[in-house]
Image (tube, rainbow over all chains, first blue to last red; front, side, top):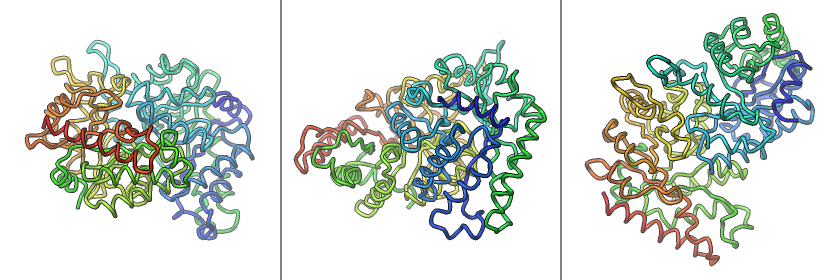
Amino acid sequence: MSFIESLNAAWIKNNSLLCVGLDPDPAKFPAHLKSRPEAIFEFCARIVDATADLVCCFKPQIAYFAAQRAENQLEALIAHIHATHPGIPVILDAKRGDIGSTAEQYAVEIFERYQADAITVNPYMGRDSVEPYLAYPDKGVILLCRTSNPGGSDLQFLNVGMADQPEKLYERVARLVAREWNANGQCALVVGATFPGEIARVREIVGDLPLLVPGIGAQGGDVQATVQAGRTASGCGLMINSSRAILYAGIADDTETGFADAARRVALETRDTINRYR
Amino acid sequence: MSFIESLNAAWIKNNSLLCVGLDPDPAKFPAHLKSRPEAIFEFCARIVDATADLVCCFKPQIAYFAAQRAENQLEALIAHIHATHPGIPVILDAKRGDIGSTAEQYAVEIFERYQADAITVNPYMGRDSVEPYLAYPDKGVILLCRTSNPGGSDLQFLNVGMADQPEKLYERVARLVAREWNANGQCALVVGATFPGEIARVREIVGDLPLLVPGIGAQGGDVQATVQAGRTASGCGLMINSSRAILYAGIADDTETGFADAARRVALETRDTINRYR
């Protein structure tokens, strides 16, 4: 099954638009886990097992693994998700972007080594920097469009249109991806929850293209505004990411299962809050 | 010594603007190396040892290591360069770009784990996505500006200026970096050799800021036009990258030292060709 097919199936099966972001920071792990050699894998796997029936996808952020020399634990984690929760797609959040010959190497890294179902990619280098990922027909390619951080406006909000027909850079990216790069139906876009008006604008441009929306929870985006701006006619079309608010909900609870139970509670609440506005 | 100081010193000491890019592709290694467990390290280290007196910096491309599960060999390679060729800075070509909390993790990866002296960064997410790298005062931060690939024009060539004062996106990036992000003198820019007119335009905007110029050799950029467009008044200011043309110059020679000798010959020729036009 392709990434897009799995995502569609998971939206329905789990009745969920929630994406749980896996950004493991060992400093925030429960004390009983900290000393274990595979603490990163154990922490993430238990979060995954506690939330897999509540999500439409998981999104490990590769930087958190790479900073800890934990590539092997990332491989093991993705293998664990595929084996234990088949049908839930895994997006590897890596925001790669490079010339074709290098992008081919990144595609090997992300899709063959890590067996991710989709990758996030930076569009700044243009179409041929994206093609090596699209060459894997079952994989998803999620392009940065409008990001949720303060500096996102530095470039993305610049006007690249004509005087009589203004168009912001992020709108051009949305248009390029929806009308040109998405020829095989593999693409999606990242649009931050901190800008609901811009989610609505992107939705207008791209039709039913899936949107990955970071920025609710720790980053302060509003769930109701996000869902109402971004949902498709069928009430789907969104992967609404929450990372820290779920992962570290039980940070103060050092019992064996406390952190995973707390994560499940917050994931359930978040899924249901999202569903209230679909 | 900071990245910028090391670079300035290496330009003079080695009388060279040449950057050797380390993009190790095991399929192209000499047969006698292919079966060795640390073939990637050995290949790169011997290229490094054969060319270190001819370059102003080395630039490993992380994708080639990550695709082969060779992170440990990349660590060993950078440690080897620092130990054996002190004073030659190492740029880790990773083109990272993410929100602040994630960029902090990438900075740990690149500067602490790998001990690189500089990183390449994608500017699409704006200033706060770059600050975590700038927080390491001795490190260099090299922003993508105008890339050498065909799709580079898709976004970078869009007009973001006014009708009466046109400005392309890559020009805006050059201006932002030179006038704002470079407050502590840590920045440089990537400008592809395939567009000498645009190298000249960037040089006009950024004064003496160092430019990393990929695209000569395999990518077809012209050395004379590149040097004349990009050199500073003192005949420096450039890191002109060549990867494949040097690494695989001796691909057909399977003697123990043939590939490194051939790499040295081509590196020497390339350095001297560059110097002819400084």
